[in-house]
Length: 281
Image (spheres, rainbow, N blue to C red):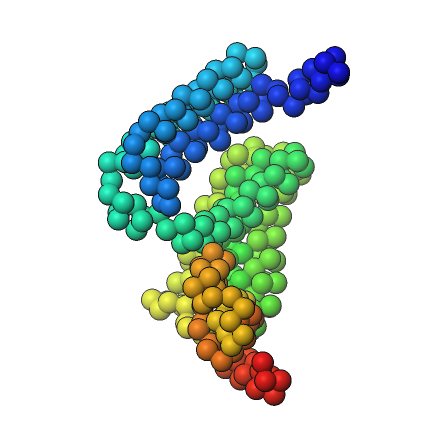
């Protein structure tokens, strides 16, 4: 049994996994000083950071340099930030670290960055270094809004935005593949070209005015509190905050989320109310 258990244990407890565990311990050394735990003593964060450093040192000594040094650095940062957190008041920490709002903001601001990163990965896998992704996204965003404004349909706006981003990407592909141009220079040029095109087009199309209100938008998710009380209103409001959705205390309406467009919310709400009244829910 011992001869069988040793290889299994060796395959599970690897230097890399120990280094990853050290990274997690380093992050925990900071997290326990934040809401809702509010550790006001630096002993526990210091112990976790020390454990992270030990795990990182072992992983680095076994050849896992990135994971090992990552654990050491994260452990040092964790205990340093934990020290700063213990010097702050609990009330200030509660205001600064509202996890539902932070997570919702993370989803909102990280989504376009993730899309851009995925585009960069596909470009790299195809053999093209693409540092003009921001310019392509800028073209897609501007012309997508312009298309939705002029056609009155968010679907058409999305298609126009995709076409605009694809066309400027095609320019980068032509110079990089067919003309064998330096891909870094071409990507940089694409970014500045997109910046110039959208800036000039905005002035020519809208002048000193902003984009008009009432542009057709992609339907939004609304979380509402309702009649059946299957979920407490506080939980539903917190769920909406986490999802980055709107929250409406509908009262007599269903607690389920509603998908509504620019002008359809009242009709949807009335339909839900009628359904509940007819079925006496």
